[in-house]
Image (cartoon, rainbow, N blue to C red):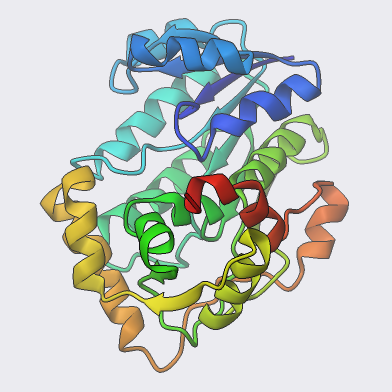
Amino acid sequence: MKILVFGATGSQQFNVIGEAKKKGAEVIAATSSEKSFEKLVQAGATPILANLADADKINEITKDIDAIAFMIPVSLPNPFDGLQFAKNVIDAAKANGVKKIVWNTSGWLESQKVGSPVDDVKLDVKDYLKGSGLDYVIIEPTIYMENMMGPFCAPFITNERKLAYPTPEAMPIGWIASRDVSAFVVEAIYNADLKSDSFKISGLENLKGNELASQFSKGVAQEIVYYPQQPKEFGDILRPMVGEAGANSVAAYYEMLQNATQYPSKFNPQMNEILEKLPVKMTALADWAKEKKDYFIK
């Protein structure tokens, strides 16, 4: 099995390499920067230089590929570019006889367009993928545990023993580890029975803010308290990384959550049914925190 991975230099797709190698796959990792080559080689992949905007190059690197693990870059200056990038990959897959595409959506898809370019463009991608005639699986993860390693959260843990996140304390979330999501992606590639399927996945624990901090504390063996970060503070920290428009969009979403009387679901209580089709050993929050302790506790 030869698998082409997009987004492998980022935390959301990097572990696809290791999970695919466990299955004996040959992994080709597309990247837009040669600076990433060493990291990808060390992980066991063959790096290849390609830009998602270059349809001809995408078509070229897709030749002789059996399956594609795909993800739209998270922080595009123009979110609507994500549709064209996805079309380039899907069209290349179809032209070259790729057997299956597995798309990690970086979040649960909305049921209809909500006026947010980042979310709305994913629905267009979904429609295009479904209409392509290709076998596909869509993996929709909730919020990554790795988000806590970001600059809007980690320094607060390190310096103030606060777990900062811009969701209300009362909002429960089924946090999921990146490695688990990658394992779902790879299992979906190898499950020949899955040809037009979507899975909303989450961790197995549905934790409110204080419960999250409690499990995190257990993992790092330190007393950490939950700090419901103000969306503006979160946006200000995020701005240098994703730009003004991106930061404002994300901050507005969390502002909406802060004012909500009913929270959107971020937990799938039917995970056991999914695990029967996609057998993945799930990671508990406390175990993840223990593994990452040296990152947070200096």
